[in-house]
Image 1 (cartoon, one colour):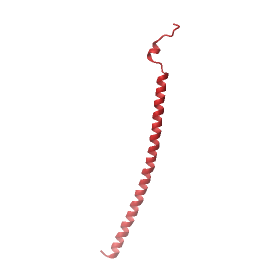
Image 2 (image 1 turned 60 degrees about the horizontal axis):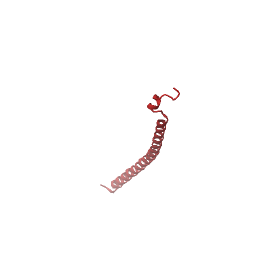
Image 3 (image 1 turned 180 degrees about the vertical axis):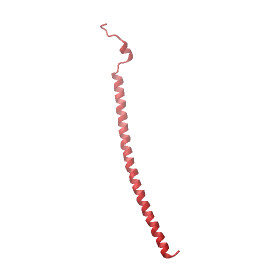
Image 4 (image 1 turned 135 degrees about the vertical axis):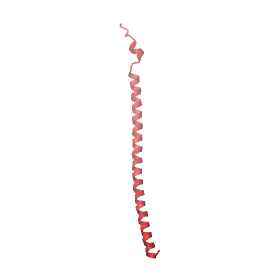
Length: 76
C-alpha cells in the first residue's frame, strides 16, 4: 500500500468517524428530548390518577347507600 493510498484510507476513516459522531449526537438529542417528554407525561398521568381517585371517593361519599335508598322517610 502506497503512502497516498494510506492517506486516502485515513481520510475516509476520519470522514466516516465524523459522520458517526454527528449521527450519535443527533440521536442522543432525540432520546434526551423524548425522555423529557416522557417525564412530563408521567407527571401529568400521576396528577390525573390522583384527581380521578379524589373524584371517585367524592362520588362514593355523595351516593346514597342501598340501605338508605330502601328506607322510608319518617313522614310515611
